[in-house]
Amino acid sequence: MKNISLKKLSITVIVASLASNVVFADNDMSKAVSKVAAPASSFSQLITDYDTDKSNTLSAKELTKNDKLTKVFDQIDANGDKEISEKEFNEYLAKMKKSLS
Image 1 (cartoon, rainbow, N blue to C red):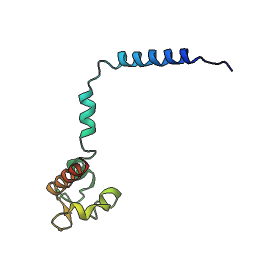
Image 2 (cartoon, rainbow, N blue to C red; image 1 turned 120 degrees about the vertical axis):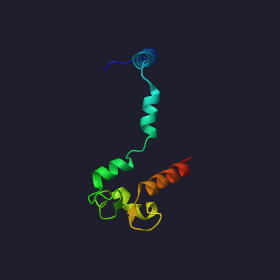
Image 3 (spheres, rainbow, N blue to C red; image 1 turned 135 degrees about the horizontal axis):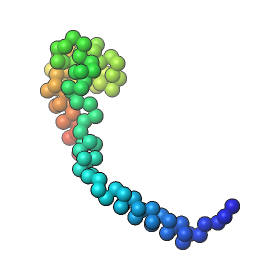
Image 4 (tube, rainbow, N blue to C red; image 1 turned 90 degrees about the vertical axis):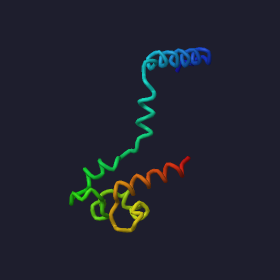
């Protein structure tokens, strides 16, 4: 097995770093940041995926296949009517975002 000198390894790492900077220089990072900042699942997508009775709200029964939302259903359902409205969903997301900052 050949020994690689520390000098050669360091030069290789520096060249690779410079090359990656050149390759990714035209990328718009604001697009990547906005994708991360956006919620993973919007309420309209949840309605499309789970609202079987077309009420524009989500019941616990409709969300049985979504373990994450089932676990926090009672926290999201602020008024206790056993339905999650878009307003309740957005308020919950805002509260979670605020608690992370």
